[in-house]
Image (cartoon, rainbow, N blue to C red; front, side, top):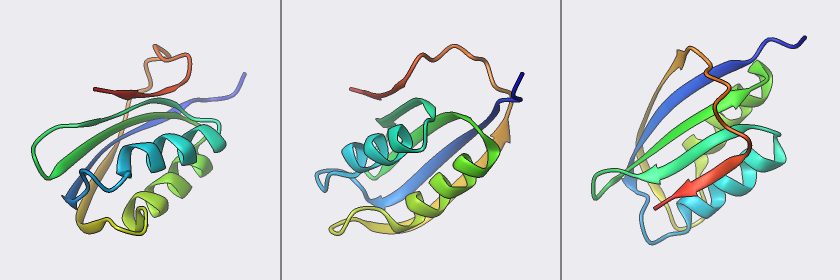
Length: 93
């Protein structure tokens, strides 16, 4: 049985209207992660992701880069307890 890790990340900056959620969804899905990405405040995106620790660390690196038109000011993230509630990675609206 593989041990599932999980992270919660909040990305601040110009992350809305630049394809950031679609970018995150694509990368997380490719990494085999489960969870979601959603907009919170006007300049924030929240990410909950579960999966292999290495894949999660890779996702954090990608969140700090973002898609071409995004301007990332800050990425705050932390390890959290995995819930295994997610079947796939989704974009929440």
